[in-house]
Length: 106
Image 1 (cartoon, one colour):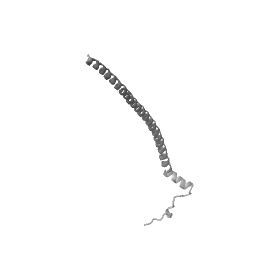
Image 2 (tube, rainbow, N blue to C red):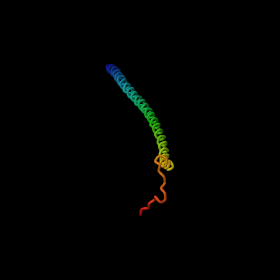
Image 3 (cartoon, rainbow, N blue to C red):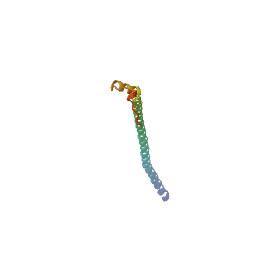
Image 4 (cartoon, rainbow, N blue to C red):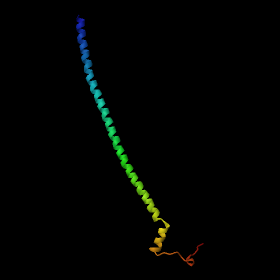
């Protein structure tokens, strides 16, 4: 009988120890779960922020491309030979040289 009395308290102690190990394991598991959830939420927010930045940059790009197109049209207009000739004739009072005014250099 003394053996049985010793076995019961030992079984009770092992049950207490295993229950004592379950609580820290549960707390650690919950902490890991919370950490994973925080990382997931942070990455989702960061991804959303990046999408907004991309949308803003695409808007800026579109505006710059439109301005570039307008500037190319303006350059083409300013470089047109008809415009340059009109300015030379009207504002600068230039005219084509007569045949005898042309000197050929050899």
